[in-house]
Amino acid sequence: SETAITMNAPQVTNSSQSDGMGKFTGKLTFTSVVRGDAGPIKCRAFNINGASQLSAATSLNVKYAPESVAITGVTTQVGVKGGAISLTCSALGNPSPTFEWRRLGSVEATGAK
Image (tube, rainbow, N blue to C red):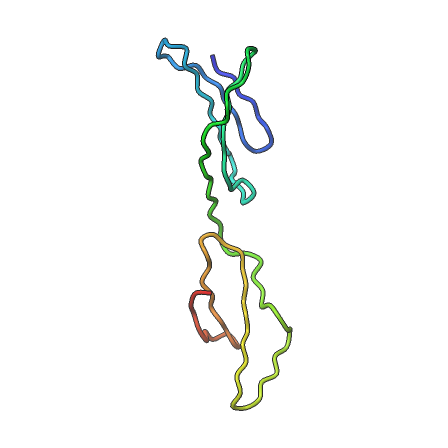
């Protein structure tokens, strides 16, 4: 027999194995993975007689495009002719994003953090 239980985004399904040894399996399905789903995941089996210990953890690594891109620090830089200035761009992303700098529509530089 198979029973499906929906809890927020993940779906939990319990189904019987046909190995004749009384082995059961549980399945966790994320129908629409989001960043907040990332991290360690463990499982536990239980019935009316008690509960097992938690399983060893597996890790869910969620990949996503860069977001929250911003130049951090001061909003206006003043440069003196012949001097140097530095700007820092930050973004969230997995894997780590690469940055491209543009000035008046032309590409100034491309590279990693």
